[in-house]
Length: 618
Image 1 (spheres, rainbow, N blue to C red):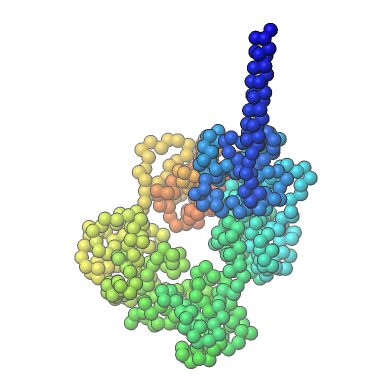
Image 2 (image 1 turned 90 degrees about the vertical axis):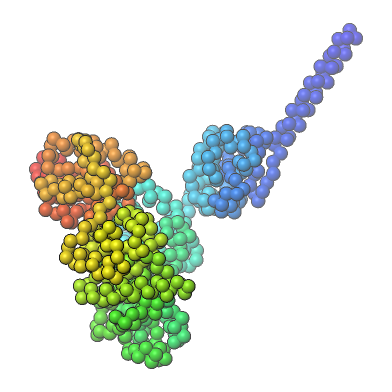
């Protein structure tokens, strides 16, 4: 019996120790830190915490991650406004948790509800976005704050525009991925603009329903964003995230033409490397000033240095008369072949008159084209660009000007023929020169003419291997006579192209798309484009369906990343679809609907010339 009692006592002691050990472990597992209201979880306490808190949002982060640092203060603020815990895991330390939940990037947020999950978090990355996302899933009585972005329809659009001085309107389609991505940022921007007391208002139009509004505002893709100022529309060319939208629209709310009270203000305002436009007005209460202000608003993105003054000292310095509007060319690009400035003063001039004047004289006879100004200063064709090591900083100005002066001597001879000239830095445009076969031409100066026809005419280094002035003079004669050969970027034409969708490349574009015996629907795509990949099988299906019933319609596709298309087929996104009916090849019709096959058929039926001539062919 003594043995049995001792054995029993030992068993009891072991059981008590085990229980105490388990209790100690449980206490340890439930021991966790708080950091600014956010629970800090580890490999050791994660499961115990989740068991006790079955609904939780967990952020997996890395201390070095910039996006994580940006999110941290918003996440902390949200933690005090939600009804469940917000937690975080340093996945660079708690590596087992990272592997367990397959964390591939930072930050990654996972959501558990009532012990089920995890589900990926796909809400906003600010306090309001986090709170709304969480509470809409855990609180059945939660009501989100009313939207600040105004939903516009045909019924309320005109009133909204007339009652607000400055409006940004998004035209969207519910199925558009880019629109879905923009939506939370757009709403966030509207809320913050309101909180700042801004006069800027944001609206949105479902252009798949409000088709008349979409047509009126030239909507051809989604999202399309328009600025409407006092009833006048302008393209929105700003960012698509909240902070960028706010800054851009706040800048838009300021006058485009800056008021320059004194002569010294005008002098400081002058640009060193771009044109400066100054309006000289005795009073701002005049139709001339109104036309100038309107033109400045239209040209916000094109001309950053537009101002106006009423200072007599400024009038005197530049011998200006009231209502004179003067374009000043930067002294860097002055030449003996043109004036240093150009003056406009015409009674009853409209903003459109001024617009035409500014654009016609937006660059000196031979200025410097850069990637930044190419789309605003050098859009008129034909344009002759001479590429070399063009650097007009003080250290290299003399050498760069030496070569520019040689270009000037030839450019002045072609002014009457409306040729525009520019010099450009060969390093800045190295990729473009490479694409034209001039990357290793061996020439100190390369020349490219951008023609009226949208084609590019590079100067052949095998044919022109002399000095710049000699080469340029001879090449311009070749251009003028129409004997120069255009460069067309083209992938090899397929040897066997018997599929339902024809493959178009640069070299066979004219043969297939401009065939006047056929109506041609062509899709411009990019190999990496997800939307293009999703559309591919549908497009093939449509081509197969039409092959027997519509022999006079051709469905084609072109990889726009490695092939050149004529300028009338402008590609601004992927996929872009055009219809080129017979007899209208120079004016193809851009398709702006969704990628539904029936809608595409209706589109072709509406515009077909050689095809879809019977109603029953639908």
